[in-house]
Length: 275
Image (cartoon, rainbow, N blue to C red; front, side, top):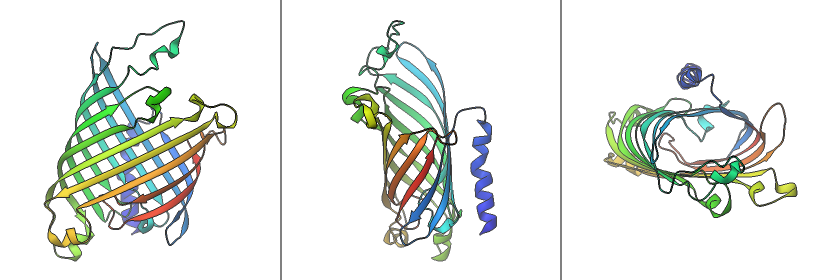
């Protein structure tokens, strides 16, 4: 178990080392899983984009990496992953024009974008008992509007492609060999700054939410009976901006559900610091 945890950390930290010069986020917290225990948690993430823009299109190369670790690997309800994307985003409205007298003018409703990417993804749970490798086509709706009704619109990604099982203790236990299946993923994310429409105590309050659903086709009946064919995972997090130990703020989060690499559905509470 210790060896697997060490290998997981090395594998997942590799992409973070590549972008060591880039901004990254972290969350350090105390987590309480359903049924216990209470344990420390560390989550590191990088989401780096390289864009080349024309009047209508933006060519994008994106690298995302997440490492999520707790002291009880079998009670970690979230996954770690490495994902590389290449594709194009298209502006659905007119290209924003910078007003030197009003820089906030580009922060308007006229900035939604639709993207189409090809990507490769490796994902695993913390003990590395379930590891998946995917090649997908990804449709993305995103926006840079952070005021007015657009705040309530999620950023959405829909991905479809082939997923190959690299390692699966569950498959080994029931005598099923590794295989390739098709999988549909839908991911929605909200980032809402209360400071855009409130003052006073709410000025530094943020709300984050993430919902992910997946459906895998072509699985053996034994795996379908264990619930591996589909699942939903959701998280809601409140963060208050405060300068503590150079962090961005303090947060509290509740998350529950099942990801493709998780054998069971679990929930957990977290409270800690976020950058």
